[in-house]
Image (cartoon, rainbow, N blue to C red; front, side):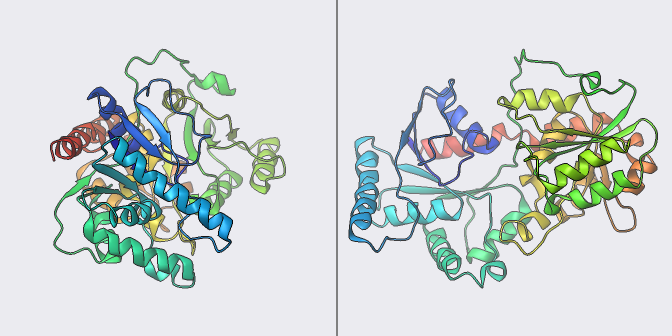
Length: 387
């Protein structure tokens, strides 16, 4: 049995974790998921996955009754690990690593494998004492891990610098890649399902609808007018609140006759989501970093940790991209899209049809050569299980 320790809610929608859990199941290995977010139901296909409790947070409570409960749950993890003869724990993000590192202090035989999706940059957390303390512990426990999973070379470079990792070579570069069911029998979407003509050209923004995901620039582009039969579709990963100012603005633009489609249906099945994307033409992968802890450097150099990027490429959709280092490097080798820059902004590319000259076969080639990471997952698990 393998353990996964995470405080996050997205275990079964995180493509990397899903891929690891799926591969373990195929190998007949059970998984103990140490996580308290039970609203994330275990998928029906994962008969080999079980839940176990973790303490609520990393800070020891001051009230005696709460401290007693915290310690009881903390020690219960040891019994679960011992009972199930767990030798390997996959720790997810800084909080997961800190909790796992504390456990290893009492069980030297445990092997920790760090799965990093969010990087805490010291310059961005300096004003938050709790996060500074967490970062210090994360860096300490980074010295006792057996392997690290991260998305690409640039994010690896950042983690090495921010965590002070030296003389460590056991890295697995696994981009965030789509969970594709080759036997998918679900709905096949068409542009006509959204009041469009099949001949219309549609650019898709999907995921979070926020300033850091470029919504202001997208709205400006829509407001200034798109060419005839050219549309931008805004898909929010969560239902809009009726009083959400962005939702109100987008609806107002629609009433004015602007070429915008608003879609906020939640897809329960990831392959339904991919089918939805596949009926459109182009993807918008825009990130506008701010001063936030998770929306600063983490998105400025998001690279291959962007879920929407890999989703678009999996459907052979050319993309308009923020100018991060990873995308600059990719475009030098694969002609899969164009960069959004101050000189050539989103409106420029749409008005000039920049993506029309991109061959969709380039997207297929890139996806197969750079984003299909199942073989790297197999390499990671082979090393883990044979240790």
